[in-house]
Every structure is written in structure tokens, then in C-alpha cells.
Image (cartoon, rainbow, N blue to C red; front, side, top):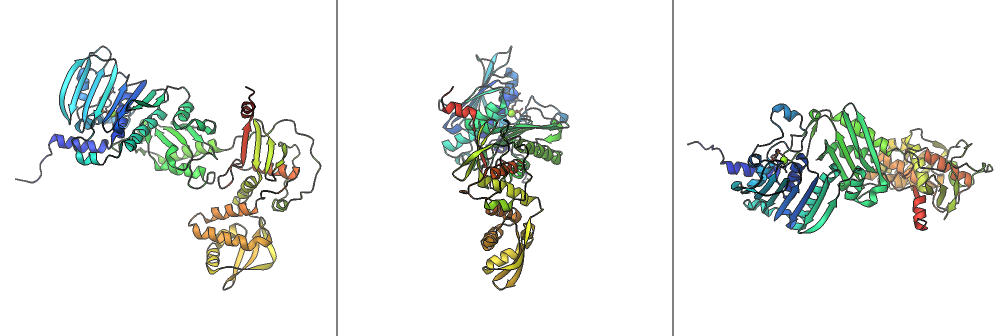
Length: 544
Ligand code: ADP
Ligand code: MG
């Protein structure tokens, strides 16, 4: 007798179940998907022991006729597609006809459902075996309970984590759905305790704030774009708002939550330099494209998708995000400006680092003054703006350094600086980067460098200090040495705190700041401007 034998069907189902159902959160996800496909307006998720003991999902969707319900728990039974062509254009969340069967084979599953004009039915399946099928009384809609997940697969059950961790995953599954379907009400209960209650909302933004944090509301900005049948919509937070992890990032393709490297990359690119390293925005982005342009059938849990034209997706995303992040206005005063002040010679050290800016004929800014020798107060359209002069100037210098037309200053006599061997090595290796920043250096002796030209941002007496700092940056950096060097030079060259400024200096700095591409953050991602709105003032003075 040969060795190869077909597996018994129960074993096949158990193996298949492993692909779709990993933990209670997978149950939550699959059941909610079914509810949404059934047109539910209200979905309630009830959990016990983080879902390990029980996951129950109740919906008010279209329900199932008794004969459909009986079929639904079989493998490869679905109402959603019927032909290969359908598979090319999936418009429902489910389509594999596997989830109910998979869950039923590894748990104690009960299903109660009633469709319009039909009697309600109750089905009970234990470890894949149909135990009961009976008529009962029930409201329209469906409720499915999955108890004791993996009770018949002890090895899998052992891999489940503690209740609180599994609960966290279950709630995250609800969050992902709730963000995609703001018009649907969601609630989640754990052992009778209400953990989430999300009424339906018209404005997507309200759902984002309700789910991810009310404090986000004022920081959210809309993302929008479309291009020949593809479109993108969503919300992102503007710098300086940031989180220490990527957990606030949600991408959807045709309302299906997906994990996608492309999105991560585009976000990194557009936020690069706007947020401090290791911090991330909150972003809820929904991409819509014709169903035949995306393959959702490449992953058992449908978490990954394949785009027919990734380049097009990339460009659409990138364009939309860039537009959303581009400063619209930073709402400086439009009030009639006071008569131009007397022309005064700038008396501050940093003036020399700024090429003579054209005098502003009709000043748009009205600096009210400076406080603490550090912050400039400005009257804005929407309230009071407080500008950090160092951060603001850093942004200006940084962008100037990025324009490639570096302002370099040749020294009359080369300056000889003594440095460690390591520093010299790093600097010589990064000579190209330094050149692009306005430095010209040459080896001079074993532990000395000759500096022939320096960027105008740098004062001659600090050359050594700056080179040492640059050596440190270059040593650490593998690829973005130039970027780091620019940030460092911008910081070194920028006007320091505790430097009194005249009115003309302030005005010029503000003008230059506004002309930058991202006036609201310094190159390290710190804010340059803080705004206190009139509403906030009114509230604090209790005028309302
Ligand atoms: P799929 O969702 O891929 O079709 P499932 O095993 O999840 O496969 O569900 C099988 C079928 O059962 C669905 O196609 C649908 O017709 C029916 N069904 C499942 N859950 C519900 C529900 N909550 N409301 C109405 N019908 C449902
Ligand atoms: Mg399904």
C-alpha cells in the first residue's frame, strides 16, 4: 500500500482554520466583516476572558434564511461570489466562504439568525460537528458566538496570550473596523463592562477623534486626491503632533484594513524632517480604486493586497499627502500694518548670516515684541502666535542649505585645526558632504586639517567646534550624512535664545520663515510657532 493518503476532512478543516483564525481577534474581525457585508448599521462585540472564553458578535443586518445558515457553516460556502469573474472584482469584505467553517471547526460555535420573512434559526456546531439546528424566536439580524477557541487544538490554545493581551488585540480589531465605517455604530463589552461605545457619525473626522483620541481633533488635517478612477481620502496629524510609535497609522484599500509597506514608506518620505526621529504621525488613509485594480486574494486573512499599478498608488498618495502637509497659511495678521518703522541698522550677530533680504514694503507681519530674549510675539489672524526665534531661524537656514546654492566664504589664510585621527578620518571621508555645505578642507599634517573655506553661517572662531560636531554626525550616519550635516549647521548658525532682536530683525525673520516650505517646524521636528487662538483666550477668560 502506498504512503500517500488523503487527509480526513475534519483535519483538513482544522489545518485550514489555522490560516484564517490565529487568535480571538481574528474571530472578532471575521464576524464583524460578515456583519458589515450583511449591511449592519449596529454591531455589538461581547468578550469574555479577552475573547478566549467567548466572542459574541451581534448585528442588525439582513440575516440568513434557515437553509442558508446551514450552508454558511460549511467550507467554501459563500453568498458573495459565484464565478471566477467575481473573484477579479471583490466588493465585499468576505468572499472565501471559509471563516464560519474555520471557526466552527476549532470552537463551540452557535449562530442565531433571522432574515426578513423567514423563521429564525439556531445552529450549534462543536469542533466542526453539527449538533443542533432548530427554529427559534429572534429579532432580525445575526448573532454568532464562538466559545472556547481551540478547545480541540491544545497546541494552538497554549499559544494564546493572557486575557488582557488578547483583549487588546480584539479591541484593535474593532478600532480598525470602526475607522473604516463611521456610519455604523460599534460597541464593545468585556465581561459586561462597556469599553467602547461609538455612535454613528456623519463626519469621518469625528470618528477618528472618537477612536484615536479627542485631543487629536485640532491637529487633524484632511487628505484628498483623485486621479483617473483612483482616489484617496483621510486624515493626518500635522507636525509637531507626533507619537512614539506607528500605532496611529491605518491604511484602507476599498474600506478594507491592510498593512502595506508602500504607505509606510510614503509617510516616512513626506514627514521626513518634519518630525523628530523615531516619532510618527497619526494617519487614517483610505484608498479607493476599481476592484479589478487590486488583488485582495493573496493572503488568507486578506491583510495584504497587491496593486496592479503600485506606481500610480504611490504618486497619488504622495501628492495628496504633500498637499495636505503644505502650509496653507500660518495665519499672520492681515490687519492694516502700522507705518513702516524707521530703517535701522541690524545690530545683532546673526544679521551677517542672512543675505540682505529685500526690505518689506508692505509688512504682512506685526511682531508685537520679544519676550525672554527668546520668543517673538505676533498678532495672527486667529489669535496670538508665539515664535521660537532659534527654531524659526533654524528652519530658514536649513532650507537655504538645501537649495544647493551654498553660501561659502573663502578664508584669507587657511585655518589649521587640530583634531583627533578619528575625526579627521570621518571628515575626509565626508568631504563631499562638507563641500556641498560650503566647507573646503585638506589634510595638513597627521592630526591637522587645513580649512580653506567655510559656510557663511559659521563664524571663524567656531570652525573647530563645528567640525568636531560634524565629524560626530558623519561617523554615525550611514546614508543621510548630508541631511544631518545640514541640520547641524542650521542649528549652529541659527540665532540663539537670549538674543535681543530689533523690530526689523523680527520682521525679516518672520518673512523668511513664512517663505519656507514648512514654517511650523524646525528641521528637527520641534515646533517653531505656538498659536493661542482667540477661542482659547475667550475660554480662559471665561467670556463664554
Ligand atoms: P464569506 O464571508 O467569505 O462569504 P463566511 O464563512 O464568513 O464566508 O460566511 C459564509 C456566508 O454566511 C456568507 O457568504 C453570508 O452569506 C453568510 N453570513 C455569515 N455571517 C453573516 C451575517 N452576520 N449576516 C448575514 N449573513 C451572514
Ligand atoms: Mg466572512
